[in-house]
Length: 347
Ligand SMILES: NC(=O)c1ccc[n+]([C@@H]2O[C@H](COP(=O)([O-])OP(=O)(O)OC[C@H]3O[C@@H](n4cnc5c(N)ncnc54)[C@H](O)[C@@H]3O)[C@@H](O)[C@H]2O)c1
Image (tube, rainbow, N blue to C red):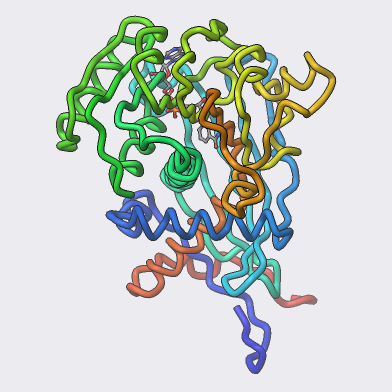
């Protein structure tokens, strides 16, 4: 990487393992949430490039996909890059995580990739950090939720709970619901081990959990809506609809809807996309989370509030660059010598 007074050179190429990523992020929930929020605001102000995610799908493996999220962030820690993340839901039955990912960081001046990071942790981290931030912003005009419920209790639910707890939330009751009894039991075990305050209750049905929660987190792998009864939401909860496809459009049409980015979220058969198709308009959107942060839009307390975040590559980049800087500062970069080898134009 070059500075104004040094010559342009090929940056060393480093590989950063999941263990290093986890160590760099350990216990930094507030700091990372602030970083993610600041990056999200920067994106909303137009100081980023974040084209639509590209979904690679396969005829022979219809439930699987690999998504490419290229992005570029401006500002002082400017960086370009790409997250390449696989979702193979059938991995879970074989004891492997559903998602696996790498993040490539590219040098601003030369375009050279300078790092490849394990990125399932980074992806879960940025998702959970923005979810925790949304829970805070969207519940400011109402009594702070004390009963949280998780529908779908895999890795993302665990990270969201960790980030809620790590940014100051504590709950009197934690509800757990999953189609898989094993996942519900595993999540319960995690909650007990984490020392989470409050009683833990496993619900057999989503209805009971939703009716019993002021803050509802959807982190399933549902491909189409499975919740359509508006009466389950009559107590007007705040809903973090992280898995994006759980709620029937009718639920959204009766709620105050917030997204992270309108153009990104109204795609790929998300519930907001279905609501747009059903009504032929985007009027059902109250705004973006950034509209709320900036005070342009207020959050009603007399309706359910639904946040549907599509997930932005700029957030992965910001967290990935943070990790890279931490590992570099500790002098622990594993540089691959001679990674770029054919560097003389004529040999
Ligand atoms: N919006 C974002 O930015 C973002 C980022 C990362 C992940 N995600 C999404 O989060 C979701 C969860 O990811 P994960 O890695 O935790 O997956 P996972 O496979 O580890 O866990 C998902 C859990 O949901 C359960 N489930 C599936 N359908 C259900 C239903 N109808 N009701 C209740 N439980 C159900 C499964 O049994 C499983 O335990 C995925 O859909 C993923 O795409 C969103």
